[in-house]
Picture 1 (cartoon, rainbow, N blue to C red):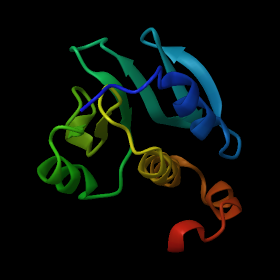
Picture 2 (cartoon, rainbow, N blue to C red; picture 1 turned 30 degrees about the vertical axis):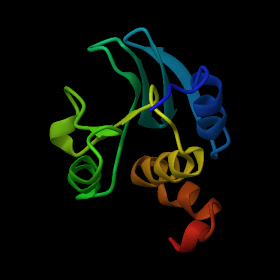
Picture 3 (cartoon, rainbow, N blue to C red; picture 1 turned 60 degrees about the vertical axis):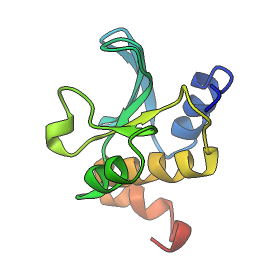
Picture 4 (tube, rainbow, N blue to C red; picture 1 turned 180 degrees about the horizontal axis):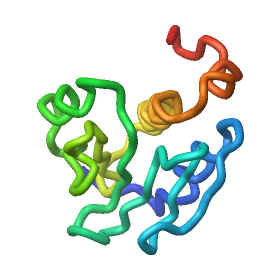
Length: 123
């Protein structure tokens, strides 16, 4: 799979488009918060993977890693809590990334903020 152009601006735009999201550096990497962390960029910080880590609904990490280990992984530190690692140094499906980011937001954001999203993608 071919790497995509610098994915950070596109990932940042997806995260910042969600209600009340802020960006801060955490452990030297851009990280997005909605009260708590929901997505953290990973620019080869812990390994040689360019990607991000995010909150995920129960069972999603196992499902996606099993289905496509070239694109998804169990990230260090937070993988044991069900967080998902997503590679951005491969051919990236940005529609899928947008869904993953929105699902991460839904896991962390307060209900009143999640309600602002409406019934996106039938969820």
